[in-house]
Every structure is written in structure tokens, then in C-alpha cells.
Length: 383
Ligand SMILES: Cc1ncc(COP(=O)(O)O)c(C=O)c1O
View 1 (cartoon, rainbow, N blue to C red):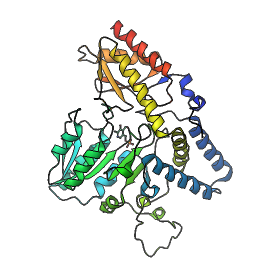
View 2 (view 1 turned 180 degrees about the vertical axis):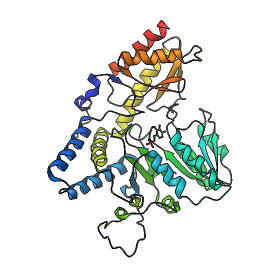
View 3 (view 1 turned 30 degrees about the vertical axis):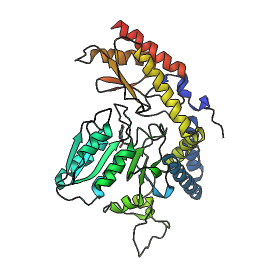
View 4 (view 1 turned 45 degrees about the horizontal axis):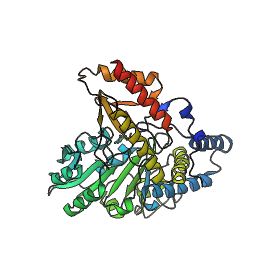
């Protein structure tokens, strides 16, 4: 096992400085190889090697468990993050008057499924977070009718990383389930759900997990799983899926309960390869490489006059850092010019809110970070 990043696995570094992993990541070479191998197998053999595909599925489930710090039996493969959040929203046994608590400014996937519960008499409260004590803001909002709190463990535009331990403990004490949208976390920062007082974790794989779109990991504790009363049923959730004339249709107890039908087998081949790459690298190394790059960006931006960095308080950093021109920019013209100039210089970023979001991955060459900083400096001076 090698801990040295093979840069050939990321040919995108020869084309551009890619600082947009919080949107969609390029597929590493090993992922492309896995997908191409699956394509060739299908072309030449159709499904004759189905037994081998099932082995890949099992390996992928084990690796998903390792990335989450969880038992593979508690993992379900779903389509996307929204799929998982809707599974919870549609499945719990809500009563009129129940409440859901979410942070204000969440990505729509972690907002709309809860707001839709209004038709069942459930109120969703969107809580503004104090960036210094965001968990306390949420804990204060928990009330006797709060059945569930749902948070992004890393904010998609703030980059703010929540401390799930105290939040989870307070939720438990209040009888509130805690659901975590970890799409901006898993694959970039370490995760150990086995040690955390959380109930559900869901994360799409096309960002930090370096996979094609169309696959998400859903983790549920055995107890929380039992609280999902309504969920889709189908043949493939059972350990013996080819028993088509099943008499006893009691759903299985493990995470496969939420996998009613045929899985995204191509996505699983890709995920299996991506997860191996991340695990070989070691998630603690991945995390520290990302935080080193974020730190370099933050320090570099702090030296550029005319730039305001939306910097989460110490210890709350993630793979996401946002900044904007410090001057008033009501029409967004300056930010538009800056974003355009970065693109022209092949520095790929995202516009989020009134700013620009930077999201390097562990393999991003440090000299490309410096290149991005010099383009920003030149452009900010120019406006
Ligand atoms: C916090 C967060 N949740 C969810 C999503 C996407 O959800 P889905 O996997 O359903 O497309 C994103 C970004 O696209 C996100 O940043």
C-alpha cells in the first residue's frame, strides 16, 4: 500500500487548477479504469460475470463502512443525498405539531423535504447559527416537539464544520433524532459515526468521494432504521433476492432494507475504486492535506488587500473556503469579473452567494494554489 499520491491518477492537474471539488470532482484514473473495465465486461460478456459484480458490491459496502467508521451492515446504497433525506422525511411517523430544526441557509436538499412536511402539520424551523457556537444555536432551538434536527456537517457555502458530538448528545437528551447531510464532509474529512451520537448520515459520492453522479451512501443506526415506518419494498433488499415466491416479506434488519431494486452497479464499481484510493491514502492524511491547502489559501487571501475571507472560526475549517471583494458590490459585477478572470486563467472555482468558493482536494498541487492566489491578487488590484 502506498501513501504517495500518484499524480497520474489525476490528469486534470495538467489542464487546470481545479478548486471545485465541493461541486463535482473529476474522476481519478483508477475510477475511470474501473468503469471502463465494467463497460468492457458488459460488452463482451453481458451479465455472465454477475457473481463478480456482487463481490464488487460487497467490497464497496465494506469500504463505505470503513470511510464512515461504521459497520457495513448499516450502509444502504441510494441514488443521491436528496433520496436519503426524503426517505427519512417520508418514513418517520410524524404527528401534527411536531417540529424539525435545521440551520438557516442549508442546501435545498436538506430543506425542501422538511418544508414539504407542512402538509402533515410539521413545522420546520430554520435557525441562524452563530459561527462561533453553531451547535449552541441549534441546541437552544430544540423544544419538546422537536422530533428531528437535520444539519450539513460542513456548510456548502460557509465551509463551517459542525461538532456533531455535543449536538448529538443534546439531541439524544431531548429525544430528537439527528440527521447529517455529510456530502461536503465524507471523502474530505475523517468521519467516525460509530462514535458519534447521530442517527442518520447521507452523502452523495460525486464530490469529495471522487465518483460519477448517481450514487449516495446512507448510514442509519439499527434503532433509527426501525423508526422509518414507510419505505419502498422490492426484491433486492433480501439476502436471498432470487427467491421470487417469498411468503414471508418481513423486511431485512440491515441497511439493505432501503435498497428495493437493482443497484447502480456501474456507480458501485467506480465507488469501490475511489474508496480504495482514499483508504490507501488514509483519511487522516487526506484531511490534513486538504486543511493544509485551505490554510495556504486563507493566509494568501489575507495578504491581498481588498479581499474579505469568510473564514470559519479556528478548528471549524473544512475543504471549503469562500471569499469576496471587500468593497461594496451590489450588482455582483466585481465578483463576476473575478470569477471570469479565474476561469480564463484555468482556475476552476464556483460562485456561491456573494462570493467565490474554493475547494481543493488532497492531490491539488500546492503551486496551483499559489497560482490561484496570484490570479486573484492581480484581478483584485485591477478592479
Ligand atoms: C450540502 C449539500 N447537500 C446536498 C447536495 C446535493 O444533493 P444530491 O446528492 O441530492 O444532488 C449538495 C450539493 O450539490 C450539497 O452541497
